Length: 436
Image (tube, rainbow, N blue to C red; front, side, top):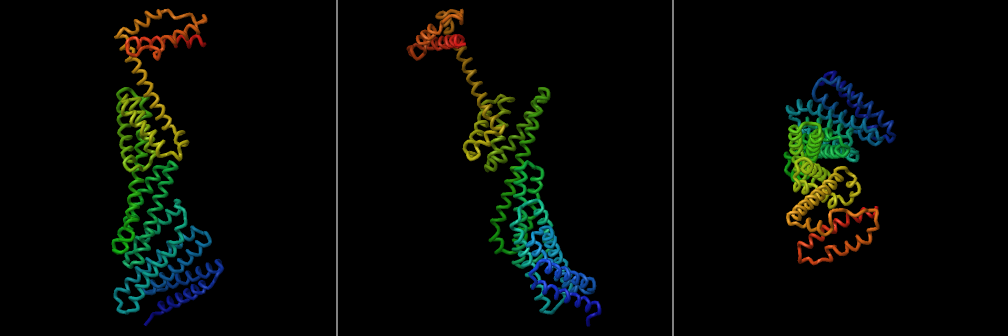
């Protein structure tokens, strides 16, 4: 026989049910909202009056369904903060309801009670799917991600094996992981690296939870395993890009200190910078994760090789790689890439390399000519006193240039050919003086 408290709880619950069904027939949002909130008041009063787990469970479950309707209503009215709150209250109500239901369902022999338990899980999955579908069109901003994180923490409390629930919950966890990834990428582009790293790290929880749910049902796992694997790979790649950016920043930090320290300290700073830059390059170069980032790292390494270690071949390899990446893979954004300081530094480094090598070739050739006695022949042909620039020598110089130009002499006599080359250079220098 039911006690007075149980009868009062049932009466209040039925009053709430009546208001809930009335709200279903209403079309105006303000009237619908009012009826649902009044129904929630009755459910709350019924919960307070309840003395047995079954009554508490029924009141909590009906409250959860009312919050689901309020969530959909607020979402249609673009009151997103309220909608997220009702989403959480709905899931919390279902969780508390099931906690109370386990006390009477496990000892009940009534077939109707078992049927109620099965319908409970199916209705939970249906309500979750209805509310979650509304969130799919929202941007992956920090507010949405934070709200989804609270939803996922509530889902973490459930332990159902019904396929429709597993699918709905797994989709929510995977959507949360995907939004974390997109938010991290957008923060990375706006140079908020530490926050971007934090969101990438948070992806581990929803991915693991989704995996646990899918492993409970082989068919669901087969359908969604590839999507889950893609999320894991995207997380790994974005984490590698962020780590590479961090190492690049560390390397640049050491480079800034090179001119401020003593010689011994400078070597240590340069070596540490190179270590960070090499790690940064290895993280992004293998998979072609970020062409712009890889080009920037190559430019930095190339200039470090050139200006500090004086390793020209290594410098040339990295600087050419930088230019190649920009010209070959960033043709759509070529103008923007050329404006970047690291690209200008790469081009400047390659020009410096060419100038160094040209100067070295000239010095080597001059040494060879001196050793062969060619310069002595030049002095014998022209003398050592330069002409007076104020006299009209242009015509005489042009005749001499025509006479001694290497294209006009016999190439078979290599000694004379080299002598004429040097004479031509000598005459050109005087010709420049007369032009002034």
